[in-house]
Image (cartoon, rainbow, N blue to C red; front, side, top):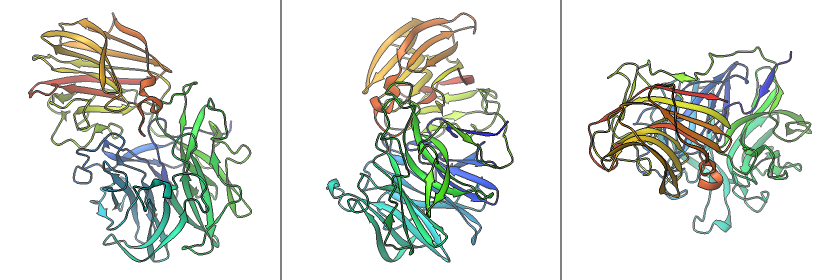
Length: 523
């Protein structure tokens, strides 16, 4: 039986992919926005099976997300392997609370993909977002996106290039404007640029059209790095804006091109899966498409021109990794790489050693409704239909103390199932937060310090229940509408994250909640 590449290759909130190769090894990074650690790093030997080997920004000294708003933070990153220096480089943008006024473009490097990665080198004078490198001979160049008139967005954006002193992070020499919106680019928001030197041509590929319904990847070429660039007459390379709104894969774009070590060409890109309707809770995911060349231009997904759910796999030896866990028993001293926290913790919010075999979350005054760090540890939703559960031991001694699970899209849109002390009453509550306003959907008196939470999601219908013995379930509510967890309702650029959560709700506390295990699997 022939091998198959199944899309998405990274399911769940893994947007803005970039990929590089060292020999027969492939490495891929994606965006993380307000979550810490930043920039997950994946490895593959066959371009089909991927496993996470670390996070590029894993130390607080590398990434300060304090005060970062939802869907700000770490935007599109690009990864490169420089043969001459024998180093890996990742270049990215830290977007603060204004897209073009206070963002910071930077890069880090490492001699090994698993790290450790260096402290960020800030690129002085680099405006815009979505940076990339061009290594051309002995020179390095910065390639970026620029809105020259931030207060007048109708004047469009530029794609620009400038030589970079790689050791000092300094732009040097002349700045070249490679593309201007409205000239070769007819769509909005040119961004996410990459340049590839292939044969006698320099190919400039960009994302454009905005990152949702009209998203696309387009390509241009020139005999010289600095241009002028001509457009592929068959642009865009890939888009689904010409398809019906109920097509199961939407919004493809933001691509990166790579030649495999067997000579094949492929591209990675983002796209979203819909639930059969008009909502996408998973966020933008990482897909892959085969690429062929015709008349010295690339063709994405030849034969259909659309992103498909499966393709014949690259002709490489299969390399499977250990099966991704469905249950975490917290028998470790650090959270596995896939776990996320909300922003960079200002001080320790958890321990895996104070009570071995348990994740201890310390109650903090901050809540999940604030744009600040809080006691939260979560994993991405990766399937349209799934079951998840967590066992917790907790005694909410004082008023306002609560802990449990949360389905989080952002601080204004989420659903919490939690056990707490509310106005002197101990109970389990199911709370829906819509546009920042809480609505208690269901509550149940509870006086036991052990509880297991259960969540079952079937597309946009969610069931919530709990148990003290894992056998008899007390139903809190069934068929809760999950569409508030979608970008279409909540806005932003992330996807749903399933989290374990504890808070003392604006009061000081020395209390904690102990989580024995966390379970997640597809239905």
